[in-house]
Image (cartoon, rainbow, N blue to C red; front, side, top):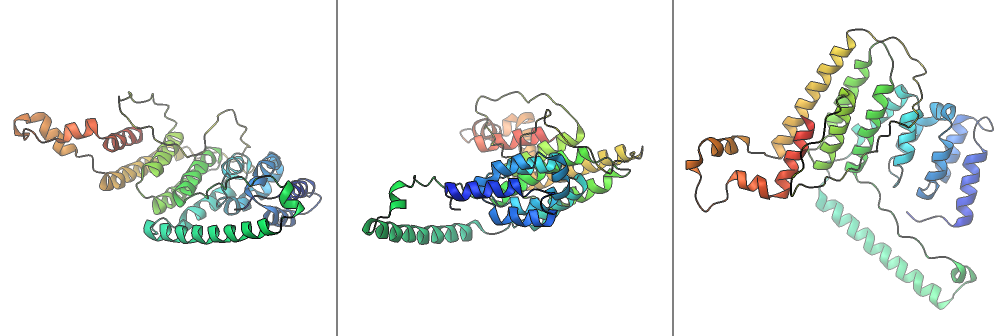
Length: 319
């Protein structure tokens, strides 16, 4: 996505700042935001969204609009903190179900390569034209910054799951399990057992359960799992539920069972695609005489292979 020129960017910032309701109505303002939206505008938009009353009204409409943009995580975090939690959750679960996570990587790579080649040819043609006839604007223009890559479908999944981790504790209703069950089903429908996605779900489950477990002992060669979820900051302001109601006493037990069933299902899916060879390693431990000399056994593999260690670290966090 090409970056905006300074004059256009300033115009866009002025537009979204000066046209805020009550100057315009909510629908008109959303149209103005959408027409000016770009990655460079996101910091200014995030400042505007600090208005709790405004974000309560329009935040849920911004989820689908912001999700494809690179660098939109701070804005989405603000929407999750300050938007109407019931409305935003509906949009987040819908966005989860719309993710396309089963597209073959080879096709994506081919398309990306073709697009990049076409863009390169266009750039070369443009450069030749500009070199032949240099304009005043070309002489004074600053270099174009490198484009930020758009988020992948897995990145979007992690962002949406992180938003749910912020949204669910904010809901104060008689039957919060109804919202929770819908969210868990949406996550399961889009979950593919990768390390990145599983890490996001681990943080989500720990937030819902309220468990503050100490970190697992570090390994000499353990992997540093990349965290692409929205960083949670307990100091950040979270707007109260505008439709708050007293919770049914039975709800806590229901939600606990839902989360336990959800985590069990995630473990099953993850282990199915990422074998941990528990049975084989247990047999090696209790029957070392059956280990073939000179051949790397399962225990050695899990002590030396970084990918296998990553699997154990992730599962250890999940359970």
